[in-house]
Image 1: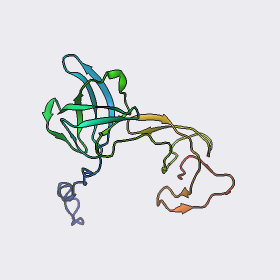
Image 2 (image 1 turned 90 degrees about the vertical axis):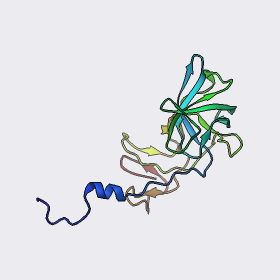
Image 3 (image 1 turned 60 degrees about the vertical axis):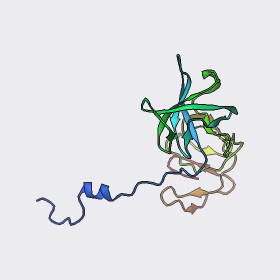
Length: 186
């Protein structure tokens, strides 16, 4: 053999030893919509991936940010009806009395009884500038991609500058002039 020096597991053995990631099924339902279809004879069918929680037929669901609430009539995965969709599942689900026009890509489906999703006025985020000409300063308003949504967000304030590899805090060149450029993180 060409690798007598290697004494570890084969690639397949190493893959078999990897533990499955834990799925956040204990958290409230969050399902960002990827698309919404109007199917003749069936009705409105939103499609998306369950990120947290579980979606079940008969559940009363709410869509953020519009606040539209309705009943989930059925859940389907790969054109087969399933009793429940868990985190990681890509599903389509049939809903009652809601027009295709009331929902769109980027809306978030949640359980109306268990911590329904709400719009956020602001949030704290870690940002790494991958490819951007020039400097990004406080007050800049880029269009961010979050799951399936594209939305303009304003950088109100940079809390701290980070080393993009280690995540440890680093110093600004000038505390009064905070900015980021390509390859930097905050």
